[in-house]
Image (cartoon, rainbow, N blue to C red; front, side, top):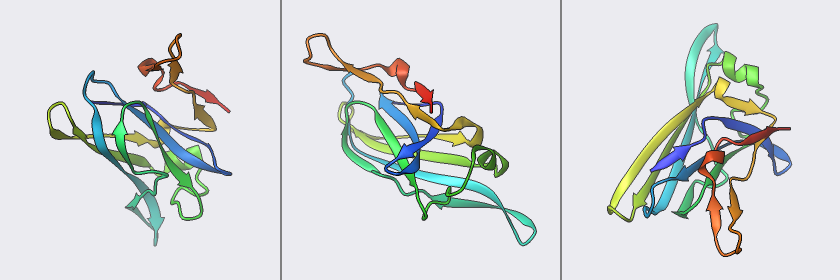
Length: 157
């Protein structure tokens, strides 16, 4: 039902930075409604001279949409409350970081709940990069066209 970008990016977001990844529905005539996303970060940290693995629920710009007809860029603002504050790309790799994503929505065509998940390791998160728009207007200006081939399209900043 959903395609996920194969990478996440850390890009400028509202005077701070944000961790972002994208998803898009790809089945024709299957509209997902009441779509929710939960994102969890797993990190290996050093506490009292021991390595411990910790989980953190990441706050999101938006964790729910009523309908998902096109793509959705999920954003975790990296602010003072974020466990990612001060992390570099190398820090994520060193901490064996992994971002776990769970998406739940309702498929109108089959009248059932859809669950899909993915994850991003520290090496799959690019810093100082931004996603490129993956949609454009049709020639007559009447329709928005989503280019699924651009799900991973990004540029370095």
